[in-house]
Amino acid sequence: MKYVATWLYQIHKHHKSYKMTSEEMTLEEAIIFAADLEKSGKAKSIEWYDHADTYWTTKQLRKLKTVTDTEPTDIQAYFDAGFDQTSKQSGLGISIYYKQHHKNYRLRINQLLELLEDNNEAEYAAMYFLLDHLERLNIRHQTIHVYADSYVVIKQLGDEWPVYEEHYQKWHERIEKKASQLGITVHYHHIPREKNKEADKLASKALNNVQVEALSELTQD
Image 1: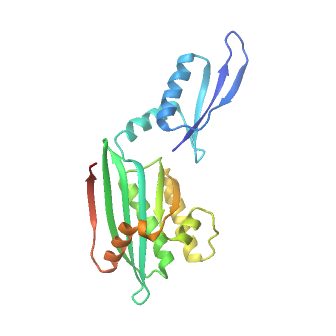
Image 2 (image 1 turned 135 degrees about the vertical axis):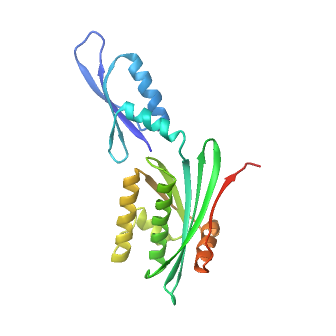
Image 3 (image 1 turned 90 degrees about the vertical axis):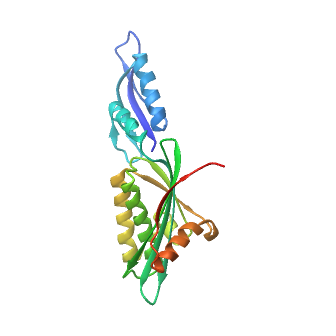
């Protein structure tokens, strides 16, 4: 998540002040910037706004920083789905990579769903499944990167293509609402199928009634 500061700049020995606006900065940069600006004694009423145009005080940002220091960060996530036309069953697979307490982790999990209409709807369901687990990990107020090999769904989720089908629209709205509730900004990336093998295998296992839920610490060689 990036933040923009606005403040009133007071010229020394003058009564006039000027409204100033900063460039976007990370939470860490915002805390340092606020401390420096306050130390100068020339700033009044510093206000902060994030990508969703939500208002923050400097005190709130500092409190958020203490919380995020212990929560997962640097989120890189993958999703995929498989659909069985005969049984109308869908297999969802997600993998989430993140950092926490200066260590790297990977969460792999899948799920079997029924009564969806087609493979693209299953892909949408997989993305919602992903957001649900980000919430369980207490991931909020961050920018995350999500990767999948479904070109159509990625383009629609990234608002590059319109969504005409009603059953896709419902999932699209649910996903946007959930991301907004979590304060998450999602950057969607389309990748080739061969680079999404992990999520694909998880989805296939779900279709074969093999449940997976595994959290592992990743070590550097």
